[in-house]
Length: 344
Image (cartoon, rainbow, N blue to C red; front, side, top):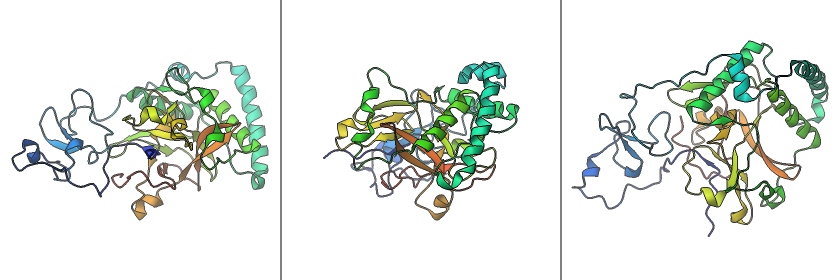
């Protein structure tokens, strides 16, 4: 039987139904180790020992949750001296280079005028449209702060910025991204909505980023919040990264893999791996869909579309979002394959 697709695999957190570690005898020295947070010694494979104080912590009890046992030395929150990531310098030239923003100011001004005119047409036709482009902050300095917050998160996680799906030798070729292979068929993005998506891409290339801030939270790690009001049905961002075959990533410990293509033939299924190249989508967190409070936080939906014959993944607002509100979506969608009960 083919393995189930790990639709939203962010941690190795076990299900509540998981039984205690079998075969551990009373005199087993590992049995004496327990988690400082929950007090349990179960799930020994997910117990970390601090290299300074020797206290134990479950991967899924830590805040933020860890996806796997770290390589090299690891220090618990009490012993760690690194509580916040180093901030990316708020220098325009560095930000322009980091995001590879177009430098031709004349074209940029012309593009801005064109965008404003086009946006008005889109809003006027709202009744017959499904998706809306994001509305960048008006203040250029505020946009620099937004981009600097994303650059901080990407730098801290060892990734570089990319706003496109990327294909590399040894992984899945672009020719494998064929929406016709989707089991049960895939929703086709309309021509008008595809134009809206392309408009969002062009705005980002000019440095007109989505009105979002990446912030660091001691409980959730990097997370994303709205920096201005966002209207329902707005395209927030596209989920991007390196494209690979699911079969190549079944034992991958990446914390943010996303399904791109779920094919009838499992060998043709694809996932997006944003650990090396990614955008702000990587830092948008998931809800705890086991609790009513967790479900109430959801304000985005992850949707896979057929765009000109290729699979693409979009994060879209499902209601009006207030400034300062954090963004969340359900990793599982309708599959309910991912245990999210440990999420904050």
